[in-house]
Amino acid sequence: MTRNIPLGLKIFGGVVGMLLIMPTLVVIPMSFSASPLLKFPPEGFSLHWYGVFFTDPLWSSAALRSIQIAALTTVLSLLLGTGTALAMIRGRFRGKSPIQVLILSPIIMPIVVLAVGLYFVYSDWKILGSVGGLVLAHTVIAYPLVYISLSTALKALDSKLEDASASLGASKAYTFRRITLPLITPGLLTGALFAFTMSWDELILSIFLTGPTVKTLPVVMWDQVQTELSPTLAVAATIVMLVTIVLIMCALLIGTRRKALKP
Amino acid sequence: MIEEMTPPTKTLPAPSRRSPSRSPWTALIWPGLVFMALLFILPFIQTAVRALTDPGPQNFAIFFTDPVYSRSLITTFVTALFVAVVALAIAYPYAYIMYAAPKAMTAVMMVLVLLPFFTSLLVRTYAWTVWLQETGIINSALLNLGVIEEPLQLMRNTLGVTIGMTHALLPFMVFPIYSSMLRIQPDLVPAARTLGATPALAFRTVFLPLSLPGVMSGFLIVFVMSLGYYVTPALLGSPRDSMMSELVVNQIEQQIQFGTGSAIGIVLLVLTLAILFAGTRIISFKDIVTGGRP
Image (cartoon, rainbow over all chains, first blue to last red):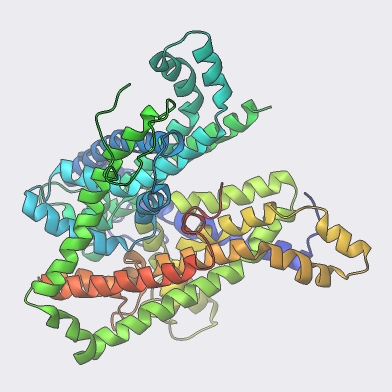
């Protein structure tokens, strides 16, 4: 679909596009600063603060913790999301639409209120400040994303392929493993990447639910934003951003390949 | 597969004969439901209980007695509405260019929207402070050029919040509008033109009304999501005109006033639900959340 776009509109689009990306990139040059003060333009050039990030246990252990929590969140939300998507699309029961509303609502509810509520619940359960508790909390918001991605994949799946497999004598389990699963793999991968990214970036739930010993990378960054501003913050910001961009590029590539495979 | 589970509706007269095609997938709904009950519904119930009992329902009186809280209710609502309007004004033309441009350009514009969508909100908001603060890039540049003599107040006020939140939420406005434009029959506008309509008239009477479902869905999601935003107002907003989410965090984390914090949270939740509910009169919940994507 190509139409004439007035010049003014083109310029507007260009400016908006620039404004979407440019402001954030400012953290990259700042992370290579040689001075102990976080400012722009940075003074000098050094990798000193990258060294600090990877050796200071405050940062490096938080980064590892974040990776661990994001990985576990991904697994849990894939299990829940796939199960729910299969039940909602294949199952026969009443009340599907309220259930769908329930599952999708974490996307749009004020996370602060959920964080407060989970804080109370976790106090009762005595899991405040635990890795498991953070994984469960992150799964609440990652699960709807996996569900959306999986239910889209399942709807697009041609059920005749499964019928064909069954009519050729394959058991249900075999059909699921050899036909259904490979066909929904791109959906699973996209969902997994979304879930990982969501957990990796999550701040609000983590502020409430982390303890003094178990902190995620965004929480350490948040502490730093409010107190001392050392260029390590810019390093952390750059790393968080690059990890996310790489993951999302992967998701986009999977998406394009999936489209390319369709006739 | 024989299922032992009997539905709770067994007391209904003439229970329907179990159909041979009864799906084994149905049981898979339970893990998700149990999870949501314990980790999504229970927390909200706990918050409501705290608000009503710690020490009592007078927690809510704060909205009538302390002007900080009643003002915050208005600030939250107005800021969210304002962000949605600004985002719409930017996103509609942007989505239209994506729709009308050659394929390669559309792809680039899509990536430009997608990247910030997934980049850490904290990183993006922090980056804005580098640009907007008194000693920030914009003020330094303007001072050096001699355009201004005093640094401009670009953040810690409504302007800062609006810039940060519009930037953060723009993708949620662009996606639904763009996808509703894609669903418009491509030959309708040319048909109107053939019948003598000017481009402006064809746009206004044919294209614009048909893209309205996307506008509605984008407007609602941005509006509702803005209501609960915390990071952006905390870093870019005025310390005097707090949004409700900031007050919640302040009450719980700094003041250790669990009852009051919960009460503010519940009011924020009810506000969100009320607006969503009003929205679902016009457009389905799933379309609000997923931007009308199939």
